[in-house]
Figure (cartoon, rainbow, N blue to C red):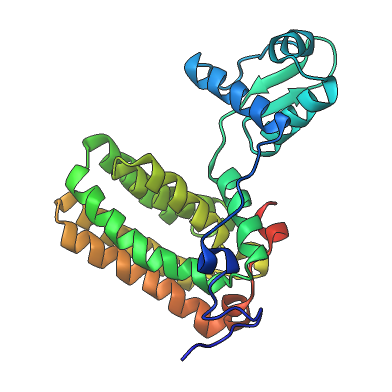
Length: 265
């Protein structure tokens, strides 16, 4: 038996996934130029703040028109790869894309697919315990010190919501980095940014903040014990409690479709 979702898709599966065959796309010249620029950034080991070649040099190097080059640069700027400094001595400067850039890209895709807020929470419920288990087996003294400092900072800033929320995000990103997998770190940080909920009106009163600090301390202790099962259990309980909190006090937010506008802010 098949069911249809609100968009008329059987089982909610996108059309492209059900048929699998997709037309081969010929990359636009602007995209190809953007890819060359990224290749040169990475192969040249250019760090954040490094200036790229001038517009004239790029036009000669890539043999494209000014409009195409500027489209390439705008694309890279929108994705957090570069920033364009105006005025004399300005030009494209290398940046380091962060989790918010990835969250923005995901937000566009998720809105177009009508993905609800609850779906991202569910992904976190599945992924973060496994990541915590992996982190417990790879915990270093440096990671442990960073995590403890994060928990201590959250406790000190219980009454400063902006600081508390920033440290909350940082803690989960630190756990992911401790797994020694950059993909996990980038993904979890972006998902945490999406599910922050503060921009949708989700409030974290002091009692809730105290519960979060206590949960983070339990996770820290489990991670530093080196026991992957304990780390997974502690993280799982924490994310499950977050889901329950949203369902109970913010059911409309929990069920609402994600908006690119809210995420890419």
